[in-house]
Length: 296
Ligand code: CP
Image 1 (tube, rainbow, N blue to C red):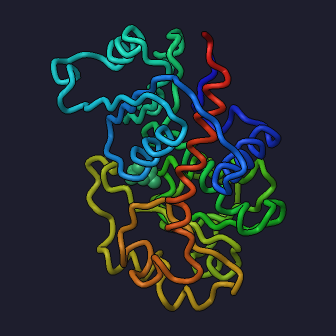
Image 2: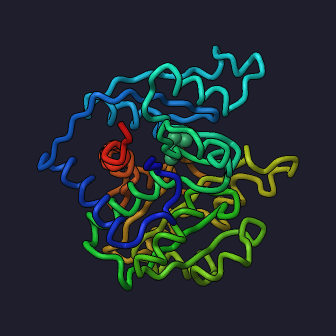
């Protein structure tokens, strides 16, 4: 059974094949149709990932079931395993799952239904990573020597976890910046920690991260929003120090005027909306890859 769980399961050739497939879908050079049935199971909130998977599935001609956690038997105490087992039993081929447990997929590996990880706690968000590297590749055509600054709430971000691994593997130079409280020393194997001012001025890609209050547990908000923006955000003033050729990215949803100034979200150097659009094509490539590994 072929599952899409983590960026770490791909070598560079595999990654480049996936992102070229995504670009071919986007540019109309590729078509793929499947009669497989897919269920989208989101145990955490989502706008972009859930709905871009839905659009991708429609474009591939798949039969689609939306699993509504709120009205499902999860509310009677049914476990994740039993819920996915039920989907398999009724004939579903692929389950796209977002879940707060970073290791949720471990318990599902003996099932025949194929799993696509749409975000696992603070562990991995591999489909976001693929759309991020697609967006960078479209802009620069290569990763070697590219400076990518990952700035903000790094320790709580599954996007950061996936991207630091992947960008390092692809030969980009990773720079980290943000509050010390939101950084872990273990990340230094992937890149160098710098000040936000240094990171913004040096980077080819300024990747801002959302402050993930929902993952801060019982910790109080460490910063007043205005203070966070001034100390660690992409302010209008810092934006003026960026290279002319540099781009701004953010996985979204954006806390406007916290991670970056409101007016920068759709500015000329921003690729945030492009990232959202690329999500559809990256997810079509992932679905095709998974479906081609389907056991009949
Ligand atoms: N970037 C991202 O995962 O957004 P959603 O939480 O809206 O899916």
